[in-house]
Image 1 (cartoon, rainbow, N blue to C red):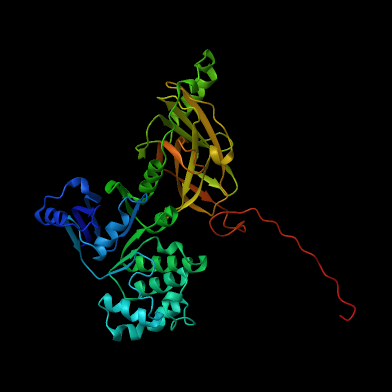
Image 2: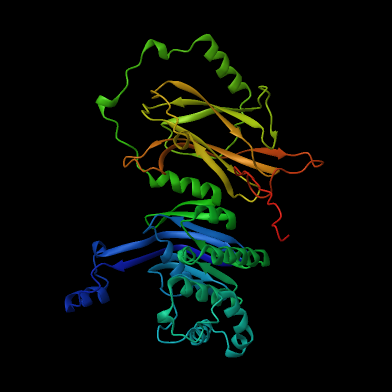
Length: 441
């Protein structure tokens, strides 16, 4: 059953709305307003969210994310298109939205609930649960204008989840507040998702989005750039945020005879091609260079898909270039069975510099990874990139990104003690000192 559906929805704002002139009013009423006067926050957007879906919306600032949420919440109406919303919507979009600053926390709980159509009798029954979750008993009778941003978020989130909504919308609001309350919120959101609530999540925290949402749309300039799995949407998002460096003629590297393959290189390429783990994988990127084959081997050089905790695997990739790439980079990202990113690193993180690769050339790169991870199945992805034009430290221009390969199974002997619990092993040392008895002891 459909919870939310957008059918060719557009939302335009008048860039000169503050100019109150008779001429402009006549042009607006008569429909003669020029399109140049309008800014389209959304353009011809269509998607469907079914009941019980955990749905993410991602995109750069100004992409139209908040506009979609406001339309679903009924805060604003679309300029054109059809919107269908089935079910009680509870939203946490803006800090303190729906709160009156001069009213106390207690009064705002009832006010917010009334706006959502929840009766006083229901809130009387749930009031203790709301304040307990927000941990605000010491401040519940204080005007909210005296609340910190974290206190606003606590009370707002607590009200939003406690009115038993059928559709819950959460925006970037949870970036405020302390880490302990954020963890509490994420635990609660997982519980709600498991109960079958329709959950819509907007955030720049891509790890949280991959953890919570099964499908996601990527917005770019008010239009849908991609709709599908959250993993691929996030990967495409990072491919969009960087711009490629313009290569100057003086930067180009001349090809030399030493770039030709020798017999040993040809043999290595043949092995990687023959044992490649790539088959029918989803990928995207500018394709200035591409991964044409990849192989996973253990320390003995054997092709494997399972590894013991602490052991290493060699991931060898064969790169082909159709352009001159002066500063190529490659990396790996590893996901657990829930789709959570547990590790990602590459040449940039390790400070390893690859040589330039020119159009028509090939390059073999081997990454050796120690699998100090909790037992279980993992998928992995591979990526090729180069620095952006602005040389941002944590963003690259994506040439080729492969999202899901594997699985790789990490195993351990159940008859021996696990070396750690949790997601991954951290470096850790233990020391001790024995203290002798005191004279009076």
